[in-house]
Length: 216
Ligand SMILES: Nc1ncnc2c1ncn2[C@@H]1O[C@H](COP(=O)(O)OP(=O)(O)O)[C@@H](O)[C@H]1O
Ligand SMILES: [Mg+2]
Image 1 (cartoon, rainbow, N blue to C red):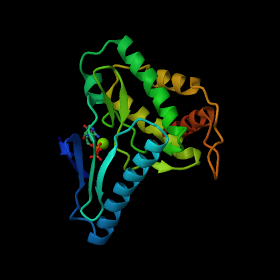
Image 2: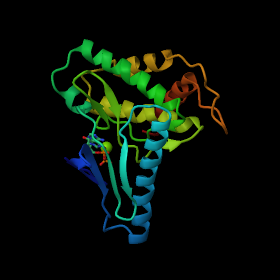
Image 3: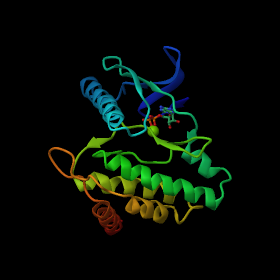
């Protein structure tokens, strides 16, 4: 199905249900102990986040099985194809607007769980035939109240859209607009801190963009 730099993902079944098996392979050029730690921490982050999101009713793949020693995670297979593919085939601006609008809402809903994605590119967003989108690949996700990783989610997405999808120059604007427009009623329900407001996140994103430009 996919062989990235870090993980091998294969498609199959788990107890009769369509599943993907994600195997984080050891990288020989890294120190074996360090390698095993990194592999475990990414798998653990992914599994922990998926469980937390499930409890909070945020739509994401269900976990079927986790084996940390072998570096293997089985999870529900999400139907559809990566957004990168759909955007690169013929897509009307109207359809894309709907998707970017959904994406903004979805991202705000993820952030309202107190979770940042960490690798928000269009290969990690799955679009199904009904136009529904699902975020996958939570290996770099964080459970945090700090505004920086929230802003970074936008920055990563922005860089991806700019580099890979220049056909949709208004994408970011549309995503941000719907992110800012989502109703927020119970922001301070979490113990231990407060999730950054949507405005704080976007302000931080603008700052990050400025920082990056300055260093270019
Ligand atoms: N739960 C899933 N359902 C459907 N496809 C998936 C799922 N998980 C991964 N994939 C597919 O495998 C690819 C790589 O998986 P991903 O979790 O992004 O690993 P990596 O860390 O290598 O990027 C994804 O881009 C997607 O096409
Ligand atoms: Mg990925």
